[in-house]
Image (cartoon, rainbow, N blue to C red):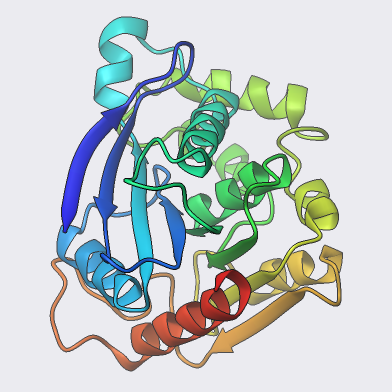
Length: 264
């Protein structure tokens, strides 16, 4: 069963939330979708229904940029997005988004969503395990290419937001990139089960970048799994077409097995 709602906290960006309830959940999984996640509802439903079949309630979370900008013009930072995720994680852990308080809680994300999952889990001890798909090792990874094109803020700006927002994002990274927005520190101090899934054909996030994340993680709890010929979307198209590609099936299988071992 699926429920859709908008999550509002007092000072952070509102979040669009979809809850996929298994009816026999042994744990709860929050899937963070940041601005780089394609709007592909059939793909999202396929992933959520697969994981719900493994006795996990799945909560899909995405920033509601349009609602935020109506009231706040072009004011937007990664810190605000991260605070919104943390607020929702806390609410979920307390049972405010489901009929009962979840016995265990995991996070997952793709691309920037994976990076945000690492940052959010770092300061939220309720999160017991994390899975990332093609996570980025730092928030300012586009700088060199963008500056070379003489557009220093262009690729820092989510496509749904005004271009000038890139300046605020850059200032946010400059101010907090060595503290609350440091992916390296997040993974170093996480000290919880972490699975880094990455496709060998991913051109958005090269393999050496996820290998850096693996190096900084706890060697006893951080696992890197490579999926042959997988790209950032595991070979999926938009709109999503079934049957799913082999790469996606592998990613889902690894994700399910990891959360079953870590949360149940």
